[in-house]
Image 1 (cartoon, rainbow, N blue to C red):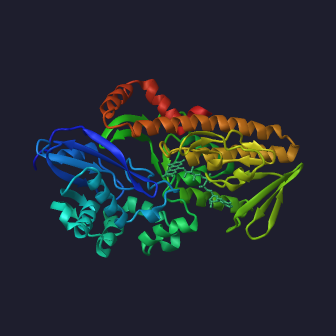
Image 2: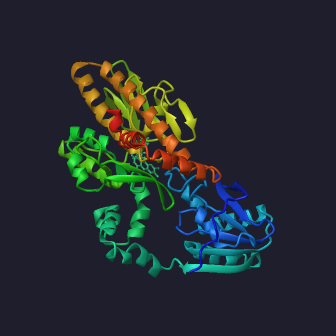
Image 3: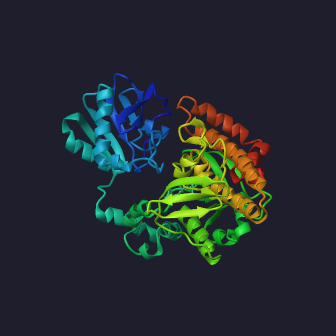
Length: 448
Ligand SMILES: Cc1cc2nc3c(=O)[nH]c(=O)nc-3n(C[C@H](O)[C@H](O)[C@H](O)COP(=O)(O)OP(=O)(O)OC[C@H]3O[C@@H](n4cnc5c(N)ncnc54)[C@H](O)[C@@H]3O)c2cc1C
């Protein structure tokens, strides 16, 4: 097979506003006067990388690359649960390609791509044949039923372990049925499969308090090493197996399984979750609080914990404005975790990018600490324990948000800066103290 052309940097790039709040990342490399060629990536969901620039002779082609709506560097990312996926369809992607073509002043272009990219190319060419000079497709897929069955069931026999993990992501009753539909149903049932994929060492240590760590550890894959990468290249290996803990690994386990284990434990201890109810109001008195539900019912309690996620209703309704410090979009920590009888925990108290897999871990640690504080407050009237929780957990959240921010900036560095970033990271990777500190921060062992 022919060698790809040498690495090349784009001579221009940008974010194209394609409507519906979406910005699509694009870049152009090669010869500005050359024959226009568009690289359509597969995945779906992956995005383009530097290797995709090297398929074309840079002397002869003006090579355009883009990250499809919701993918790669395009925003908002499809993996963000807040992203509206009803405006991410094949029709939308075709329209985005047309908008990009017009924006770059290209009359006709050659289309190149494989896998899902080939499906999209063919759909685009059917819609706009006059805009296509040639088509070059590889690993052709038509997204037919038989292909979907092969991809999401057939290959399971070659990767039995991964297949079991994949099946475990949907409710047991669905595992021998249509997994694609079962996954599509998950958002409607409130399950969180596609989100947190790891539970870190410090979280497992803390979950010992409620007796679930061993159970959880048995249900996931124990990854003793992790790496910061750029595509296929490892930049910094991070060793968890040297951490001073009973859990010297990061546990890979889907969020819905973690949630199920917690729910089972709650029920074993005599607790119950009541669903579906929507909290619509909260009011406080000197010795308690009342939460109004959409059913018309009212719940009275001594304390209310707002653990209702990033768009928390209870937090916003609590008497004081406690959702304050906004650093960037989706990066926030509440100014106070306590407003009288209302306490915040989880994403209601802090949100940040998923980089480093920290959000749920931090929320679980909030919950364990708050559980202890509440039991002392209820038993002994020690409200100072609640303030201790509020201050301590907020301080931890500030550290975690700062870490996720740094990791996100590293991951999304502009193409021109990446070679420098990679060199710096590779150099730092040789410093044992740097690697140890990173492992401690990611696992939160450093927050003990
Ligand atoms: C792509 C992605 C990857 C991630 N990966 C990781 C990872 O690897 N590791 C990690 O630790 N974290 C990760 N996270 C973050 C993690 O998923 C969240 O931090 C976690 O789900 C937050 O849990 P929570 O219970 O606080 O909020 P949520 O999971 O949002 O749950 C809030 C609950 O409250 C309910 N609710 C909301 N409003 C009301 C109301 N008014 N009345 C009643 N109920 C209400 C909702 O229905 C929901 O069930 C990731 C996030 C994303 C987006």
